[in-house]
Length: 533
Ligand code: F6P
Image (cartoon, rainbow, N blue to C red; front, side, top):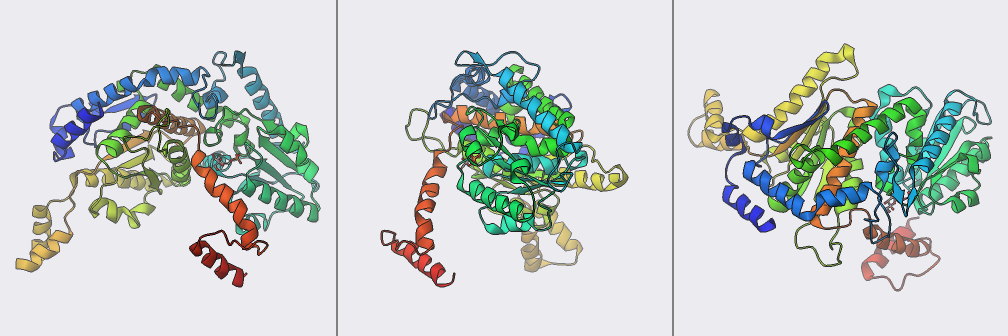
């Protein structure tokens, strides 16, 4: 099937995307809806035949069977011997989910209930710090223990009616120093979020926060909470069991915002809005599980991804939310997609014969338009763009600004597809009075080649429910792409080597070891730093 797809692409590669609209109903045939969400992929070079071949590819890869295996708790993460059940965290009114024959739902609901009463107590002032009411919450975590809640807290700012939330991730002391400055240790709750509770960045920052709180008259025993699978370590750190919210190893770090790792979000927006967030994701789960491939948003988004990266050979994809509150979504998706699908061997350990996942990057529009869109429009490479925008913003008094935002988003997709021909550019320059060689030269700079692909995700408004849908949509997209590539999307061995070497290098940087075993370059760099510490 890969060969057929490549051959089909090669045969039709030169056909302009805009020409595909000559076929009636292209927009409705190459778009799909889930509830009130609309995904349009008609501005790509995928046509009926290519879509059929892509769906065959998904079928042959066994997407449907693997999807069932995931939802039903089979140990599909087989390099770690784990089930993959972030979907169970939002399966609130669904049936039992079995892992090793035991239903995990009662445990999930029990922890969610504990989180909700903790959040209620804190938000209503019953749970206080040494100085009284908790006004600020600092989540210390990194990767999936940071990006999910940080992204979602920003996205749902209009729903905040609880304490202010802050996020510290980097081991760079600047991060925690800048965050804690201005906070009152007697009115702050520190959440230590770490699945393993061994991540060096998080544990170092947690120790710094504990000392800060002690020195500032706060009470770390009462003002620290932990989110982790490692209950021994949380106890060892001195966090009382009633403020530890546990989860299981079948929740991957980058898929963990739906459970305890989402506590800071729940504190900010309240348990009810948090449940709406889960409901949105659950609705996407149900759609993903039941809809035919041709109508299935996650499957279609994945097939577009496969088409662009593995078939067309475009090395990156840009996620471009026209939604300032989704400013952290590209970073969140970088971890979700690149940590999941940035692999070099298949499930069987053999080297992949197709490229694995692409580089994912992006920024909110319209800001990006004034920065890197130049390359997207006129650079020599092609960057498939994934736009998203809400039909309405929360700022009803600024509706005219939202109209401008939407117009910009749609205009970019249009410009990318249609471009501007040499003929059009020439008449523009001629109208300005240019002639001859100078007319030609100036016109060439104003040509947009067009036929640059983009997709568009539209939703009514960025509510907790819609945010849940968007994240679950991308989670399942990653899953489908991973199945098609035959890789394990749920491990991350590639992050280990650097961690090990950093631990070994720390004493060298500190001057406590000589580092003679290091390469010449590393020794030179260490030497530079040591002399300037
Ligand atoms: O190093 C990568 C990673 O393991 C991510 O997968 C994870 O989200 C992050 O580190 C943080 O891990 P933890 O939650 O265990 O501190």
